Image (cartoon, rainbow, N blue to C red; front, top):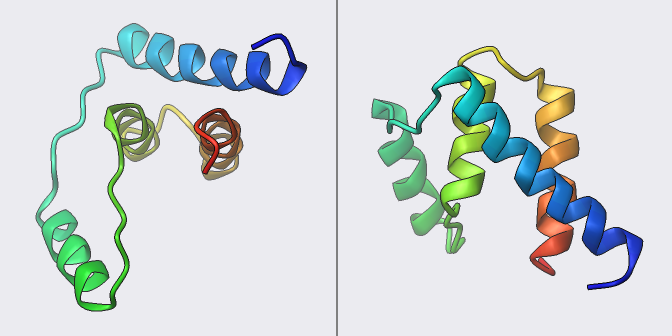
Length: 83
């Protein structure tokens, strides 16, 4: 884990978790989430967000992150996960 990309990605996950704690944000599914999951499944896409990604979504929905910042953090987090 010595390279800078991994350290940045780890920092992204830490930042997401810290923001969620700071703002008392947890993920709660919304009615359209199940619909979106069903549509993805029917389209043949196997998309499952992990707990950190769900927190990131909740932070954006709650207005604590702009779409730009949420995307930046998500990309950094996905790089850590080698996706």
